[in-house]
Length: 350
Ligand code: EPU
Image (cartoon, rainbow, N blue to C red; front, side, top):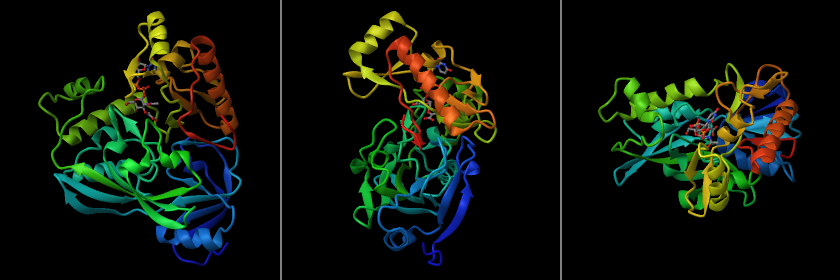
């Protein structure tokens, strides 16, 4: 590999502990830190030819390393934010993949722009946000994504995919389905200049009221309420290693949902967007199986939220995965539902 070309830096035998929010102690034989995405064609065509398929790492907040990654790990460290124009009452802003997501949310609020306030404090980077279509408190990022810029490894060119071409779905996108094809380099957001609060998610209005806000809130106040709820419920990865929700809320046939709801009327369920299916609360199913707060060694389930797999210190990725599989097996045995993990698992199959 040619280490002299500009725009990237190579680190051999790199520790990834601080680059994955589970804090799992793994090492990459080669870590390539890309500071200018313009360097990607050169990197792929000349420096990493053939079938080298690097693992692209964002903030490492949605990944579980079951063992050391084998090949090259690529991290995008580009960090610019730039307004790029206005269209029908909205401002378009372009942010590089390497920008820290929460910093970007704060930047938009500081510039009088709204749309992302419900997504405050989600760990990770801007580049990772469209990959799993991050969502929280009734909003998904796809609603504000105007276009995604990426390097298409198959075609060897930079592409710009309009939102409709990204195949966004619940915690899913084209980029998640084809991880070896696209390297997201920047995201363009379309952010309304007029703020419309989105407060339908249970607890948000109550949180604002507890902050003494009863009038229509400002976007920054909604962000503050979201941050307060998140800090209370979700462990801080800097204190207790985790990747947010480890399991997706399962989407099941409406008939199966109704059968389960008849038996368990307190099981929270939500519309899935398709009348033939319904989304169920994975946290409730896991909680009912008695897993909340349980641990084996340093791997366990958070005491504050049943969806969150946690590393109490020195757990290996394999130990964390083992607990997650036990949780899923119990939920399947008791409720007949096959839970799917939300993060990407490296080095093992689910
Ligand atoms: N619940 C339990 N036990 C628990 C936690 C929750 O029974 O330990 C039940 C409660 O009835 C609660 C319901 O589950 O009302 C829903 O819980 P919560 O509001 O915390 O939301 P969630 O469905 O568990 C989803 C996202 C989160 C996001 C929150 C808020 C998924 C997989 N998770 O969690 O996203 O922050 O809604 O919008 O969709 C993430 O993706 O990493 C993430 C944290």
